[in-house]
Length: 220
Image 1 (tube, rainbow, N blue to C red):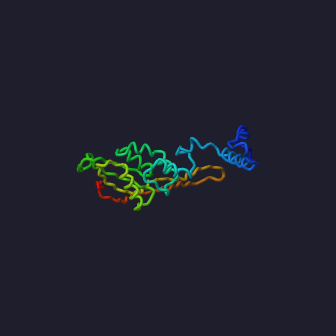
Image 2 (image 1 turned 135 degrees about the vertical axis):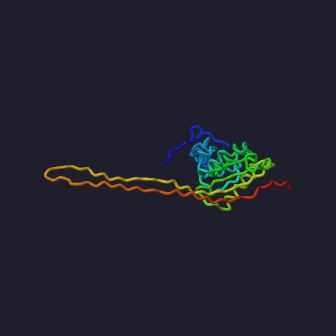
Image 3 (image 1 turned 120 degrees about the vertical axis):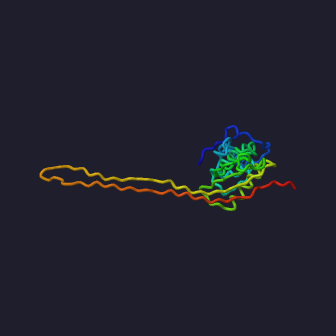
């Protein structure tokens, strides 16, 4: 039997009238016991990094996280719920786009119109999104487009390039076997052999690029 966490004062205090029945009093005590048996959830409940796993999606809804996906990993969901308000604060900025994509697990580069070659019209920017550990799917493209539609300014025009890359790093190794000669009369070692083996690796770097057309925001 677990020990009761109900304070001693609550065992005698009652909100019921004096003519309460024993059954009503028993139900009141049972409800109080159930409430006090639960550990205090605050402040961890509203902390995205420490809340319970089954409460992350509820916290994301409460903070109105943009483009929420239940298929994301727990780490990604915690980051997005934690930074929901900061993302709104940085909406329409280069830093905001990069941080929002990073929280979704993507690397990115955002280039403004005046840094492009040739130079584009004002408020035009180009985005490279790097997907290094996942497949390029239509769902990823839709999610990123929806994120930019929510975060960009009304006047902004953007172009998104999705890129998946696989990088191999060269490795070189050498193994050597060295002979040591010991002489013990009358047995004398006549010769020794040393050998070495070397291995050379090759690097492979492949890219798959998906480019979207510039997206324009049209007023209805």
